[in-house]
Image (cartoon, rainbow, N blue to C red; front, side, top):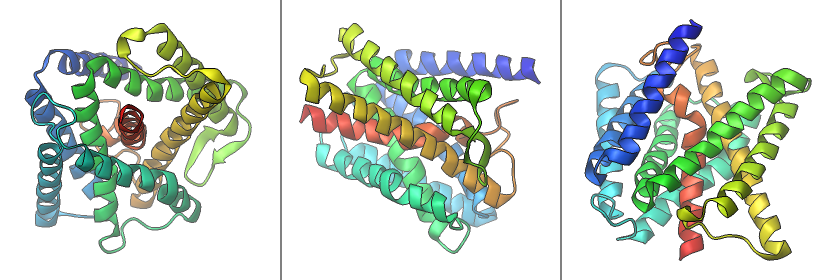
Length: 280
């Protein structure tokens, strides 16, 4: 199993890096569109959509995603042709993860009731897909740096949690996560964020200055880390309610696409929104 996981991970990393740095913008948009459709297919399974209903849901989601890319000016080389559209979608996505999702986790509200899961699926998948296209249009290195925030948080939380984790973070949703692991993720992400911002000027990210600027930047990194954990827990809640271990089986040893991008779905829209607001 471990050998299979490692082999799949190497293939995924190679394919992702090749797509990020080698594909033209519209080809990248198509690549992300495929990911959106696959993720929506998996989400539809978690909320109990079957047959024709699942096909319609995936088609409508793909249509919304493409329409948002076209309206936002992302179907070309410009990342800011229609910033109002991008700001709206990213704002809706960020608002969901910052305000609604934590309440959802606290109350363990059902996702399979009526059309609730359908709407939530759009909030989970579409802003994240749009952020993937937007951040890559800004600069492939910016997208890679943003994704690395989630990877740093996941790795730090795993190893710190295994080493000193004692207090469960959300035992009814994901028993393996601990408060110590979450704190470790925060520390490592803050360090990573300052190293990248000050040590990688090629990214063109605004460098915080002064005490207030540094504290504000650190607070933003803490918030992004917290949101990444919320995204992870939210997908875990959906899988627990659906009675499944993984969202799918398309990735040998790793489950489904949603299993690999759960934290990215919550984090990337927030990063895109922050970047646009900072540069506006």
